[in-house]
Image (cartoon, rainbow, N blue to C red; front, side, top):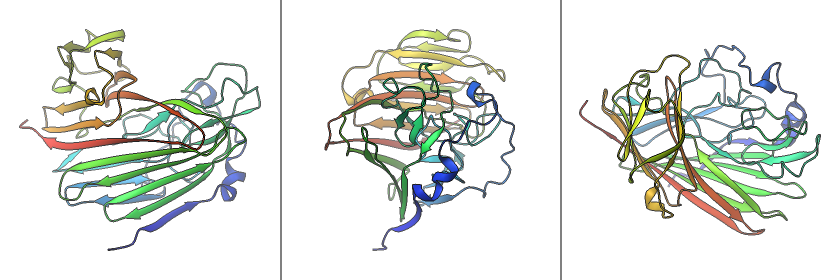
Length: 343
């Protein structure tokens, strides 16, 4: 058996000077995009995986040269490419790129609610799992769309084995410390991707947070239009709908697209109807114009579920709740099964 290969060891001390106390680029406090061309796709640390059915590419975490260096999403598992039977499932959905824009990111990426933000004073620190130790700049409430200066990015270790890649993030503070491991495996002999997570609390404080998977699907480079359907295993009701009824609508256990989106249009809703069992974390996203489809499952129950779509991406946004006492660990596994339909 071929031994795993360590393809990246990012030691925080080597990059601390570049990342510590870094101010947001001009305009980013208000999340103003910086128009930077995304032309050279070889410019960032990356790795490819294949199992003969699926081919995937990953941009690797790096505080100095990584593709994504903002503070909303976990830096591991950024996936600009996933291909199956001639179909593509991810890609650039946003109009402008800069490494510190909060959502200039691709793939089934995840975001945690921060630890210790409310207790921090202006100039003090808080923790974003999968990112590092951040600075609270003022008395404003936490805003997930805002860039926060990175005080210390922690240590990243990336190991590749045949058909698999593992990301490990180690972070230690006087209050919150953890070891976070994300292992992504392309299952041998089938069009399946499994993402297994382990979060161990190595600190003094209980870790309690929510994590959600944004699922930035860009299917076959198609814009979002009639023919794109999200199917759930329960009858859907919605709360706080925006654009529902005009751009998208609920049809029993499905959300269907009613018309093509204009450049700046989007739709959003909080979804209800699920139970407290893991079997309701089971979604199917189907693109009937091209025949590409995917099923997403988890071994943990939903804590919250949202739906968001814009002109190029349609995203089920499932949340799970995490509570870990010091010395304990929490695991969760996501399974993606890719399949095709007759267009």
